[in-house]
Image 1 (cartoon, rainbow, N blue to C red):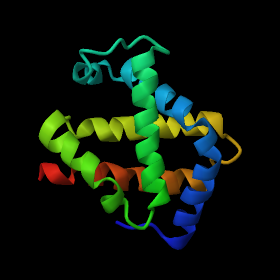
Image 2 (image 1 turned 180 degrees about the vertical axis):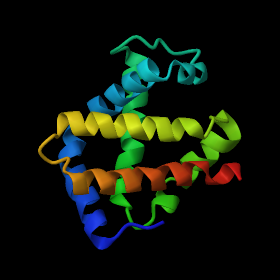
Image 3 (image 1 turned 120 degrees about the horizontal axis):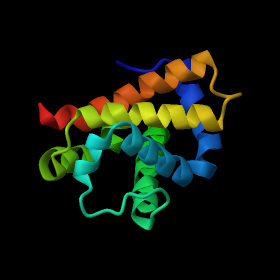
Length: 142
């Protein structure tokens, strides 16, 4: 699966707007993930997971940075996320389903924060992009 030129343009353009709020968006997406899918909390037994906690904000920043790295390397998402793919598969051993769940929560968060920009075309492009990100993060599991 690859992005069309129009989809790549949408991703890069929207990331330009998202970047200023990226840390907060990453944190909000994690809060949404844990509230909607409490089973995902099992990977964070050492975190204080209450809304706004320092650990949640720090991990939200990491999530946002990874998405930003992928958006900045939209033509080579696999290369941009290779280290994270290995970390999650070999060290953290995160259930691959969680990447899809987090992707959905991230899309909902972006849509809520940027309703005018999150058109049907933008939604489709971001959904496809996040599917690529999820696939890259799970490719080492195979």
